Length: 430
Image: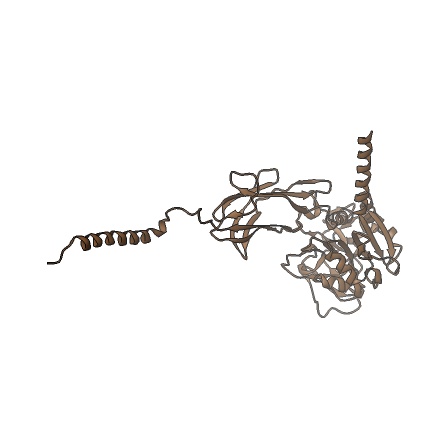
């Protein structure tokens, strides 16, 4: 009976912990967004998240009270409004620096708060009242209009971000362009425009285009070094029920383009939410061990030239449980200021990586370091420090090969002294 009571208490506490780790604050510019984007919000609720919807003009809600965060994740669907003091830009940046996740949706009318937040993450939105326009990749329903309802299918090819099924169905997009730093190790262009697209205003003739072609990013993501994730979409409509349920057909002059009964917006937005809230692509290193070869216990310190074995278990969170992560490109560095040893780790098909190497002939405080970074995955950092001492006086070899010239010179001096002594003692002067 007592055992069953303990089990029930454990499950109750576990459920409370799970709920507390899934608190989401949803900031809306218009209360109607809760209805028009209900499919997107429902996908979170089905996965166990608790969503608190507030108006951007509501100043009574705070991300943080008395130094404690009230929420674990944040969704900002208020592109043109100024954020309240309870979740202003500095507070949101602290929220990200604390390892929490944020989803930000923009539009052609972009407020200063959203623009400043994006700028702090090295994401630059286009000018106000501009749209991404594409006269060759627009939906047929936009034929007689401005061609701002574009059909986008230039997805980042990443199973980590979009799951095993991936993002295959074209999506509908109407919004503002993004320009991100190229080759940044922290920024990912999750969805880009086609080569024929450009960013411009509908109110003025096109004279100068600031960003065009495949350089236009429609949806981007920041994978911060503390593993917080920030998602930026140039379109709020991308997450809407209307786009999720609309058919999509790219315009083609010969009328041979493929028509899809339903756009890929629903699945695309759902997969973005899964990745952004760290339900996929999270790595961790556990059970780090190191010891001398042939032993099992980790010593207090090593001696130079010891043969040691290092092992670590690397796991990936798949949304339900931790599973072994298998890769052939993970390296271990043995560092004291500079790397003295850099070697590859080999796994045993169960996520346990091992290697053996000989310590250098240098003593001091050394660091076992794994620093692993791959597109779509969280940054994996594992650091273990251990001291290395020189040989004691009685641990050196009796004779050192490199010292044989000195041994020879000493022996020759002794032999010379012996013959000189014999000559001196037993030779008489005449």
